[in-house]
Image (cartoon, rainbow over all chains, first blue to last red; front, side, top):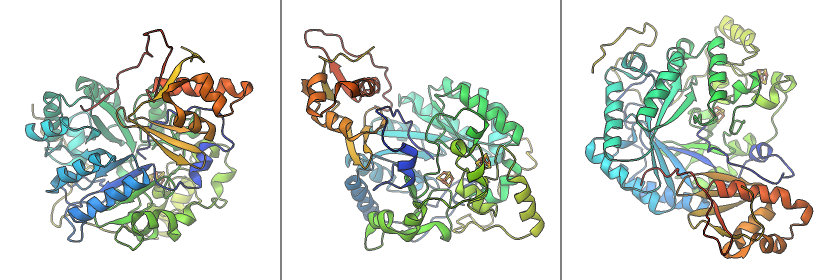
Length: 393
Length: 105
Ligand code: SF4
Ligand code: SF4
């Protein structure tokens, strides 16, 4: 998750932080808020299956009310996303309202709508971070996943931000089988723009459920990635690769699944899920429009209360690497059809492989992502064949 | 650099503290760093750090004994490095060296 870089220090507490976080906090630390399901792109791995706006999306006033609540809860910043958040006509209004109310904003965008003017406007705001999604170091690798022209659009946005003197924005890559070998090139691209590099883990969530098999890194690539990250502690990861810590030394950051404990998602219609990667009824805790608002959902929903209970025994708890790896990512397990107490499907010790084989043999369908807002009739880019796209410029 | 006990401590005005069971979260709105203060006594120190009191005075007020000092001094040093607090020794102009990390504007 987009957890902060814990600069934590300190006098040893009675209980470790990880244990504290497992019990849940009174307010989230890392809150993702997706403002709209509308998106101009159709990325094959979109975690929220975005495309079309949902008519039930929160109004501007309702968004302001959410911000007011976050301010009261001292949620210091939110990660705004979508869909493409800049497609909301009131995008700047919401961002400005949040920043004015002591809720800092980091927003994630594909960059299409960052023209010269938008870049200047963004550069003029305090407490605002921009994160541009780009899933390859060149157009052919990126566009195979994010769609034709998306690489050029992101680069355009970066040029505009640079020209507007925005400062160090972030560029964010979802690691796949096809871009994992480009990490050095990608880092060079970030350096060229004075941008901070962020790499995160692909999960079988949203449309990713259908592309995960083809896209997720191989075991050898996971190892390669682990050592690459160990050597570069300044690369941000949203602490999303903690399952790799089973390979040896722990990666920097918080090694735990924070879903419903310190992490959650508010989706465009106000539904509150345990994390951005589990848009499914099973992980739906409530809605910000409910009587108790977001605070009520966070503090008293049955789902979040249950997630804060001690975990039940499973194969992982007897694994020697459990302390480092914590059994991995709940979302990844869920959408490939594993039990939540099973090992992560990308368990670096290979412990999930027999289970995945059993799921495949049973032919039982894994749980399907819910809330599909994909645009009908829009063909998705094909990551499978990786047909080279034209490289412009 | 080590933290001088006669240094005056001031919590950066851009830092907010959020009380938690284990202590508090400290967030710096300027450089966007988040720190976990893993002890209530450390929170007490920071809450009282208004730029008028020294490290030694703050520790005494929070009941931090000699034996516990090293860990709290280390904590303050980390916090100084992430610009959460400023520690200045009266009579010197030397400020903590800070790495510039301010992003947008
Ligand atoms: S068995 Fe579980 S705890 Fe052990 S490495 Fe695999 S996923 Fe992690
Ligand atoms: S379910 Fe996975 S993505 Fe979500 S918080 Fe847990 S580890 Fe992170």
